[in-house]
Image (cartoon, rainbow, N blue to C red; front, side, top):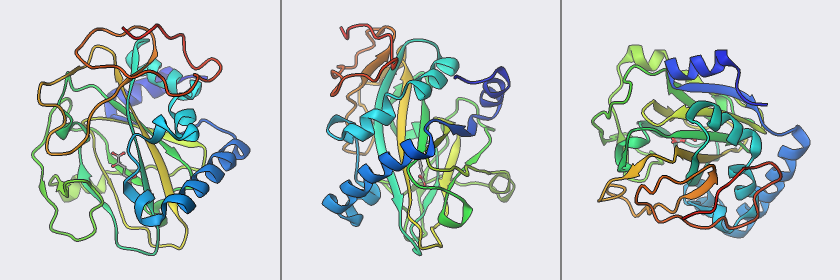
Length: 263
Ligand SMILES: O=C(O)CCC(=O)C(=O)O
C-alpha cells in the first residue's frame, strides 16, 4: 500500500497529509507497550522531548522508522533513494501548558535543497483536546521564514523558536487527528506546531525525518543546536552528498527496503 495519486497531488499542493494507517490496533498496542517501558526507565520529564535518534538503540523506534508502509509513502513522494535523517519523540502529558510553537523544521537544519518529509507516528491517539499537531497548508513553497523566540512559556522546541503566523494562517491550520498506528506526513517548509494537552491522556508521537538521497548537508550543519546528522540509507542509492552515513542499527524489516550498501 502506498499513496494514491490524489494524496500525492494533495501533498504537493499543501505539504501535508494525515490519517494514513500504518499498523493495526494490535500492532500499535505492542509499540505502545515498548514506549511505556521506555517511559518507566527514563522518566516522563526525559521522554517528553529529549529522545533524539533513539532508533540507534531502541528497536521499536527503528521498527517505526524502517516500516515498509511508511517508506512506500516516502518513496511515492520523493523517489526511490531515501535516507533516514533523524527521529525525535514528542510526548505531551496533561493537563499542562506545554505546547509547540509555530515553526518550520528546515529552518535550522542546514540542508539543501529544501526537501525533507516527517512522518509523525501516533503511539497514542492524538486529537485536538490532547494537543495534536497542527499544520498550516503550505503558502511558502521552498522558502525559509524568519524565526524569533517565543514569548509564551512552555514551548517544547529546542531553541524556543517561533515564526509569526497571521490569524488567517492560524485559522487555516489542519488538525492532524490520528488514531494510534496512523501517521501524518508534513513537508519540511510547512509551518506547524501544537496546542497544550488539556486532558489527562498522554499524547505521544514518534517523528521520523526522511530526505531524498540528493539532499546535501551545508558546511555548518544544524544551526544553533547540538544535533549531528547520522543518516542511514533506507532504500536505493546514496548520492555521495557529503554525509557520513551510519550503518543500520538493526536488521531492516521484511520488505523494508531494496537497499544498496552505504558507500
Ligand atoms: O508533536 C508535536 O506536537 C510537534 C511535532 C513537530 O513539531 C515536528 O514534528 O516537527
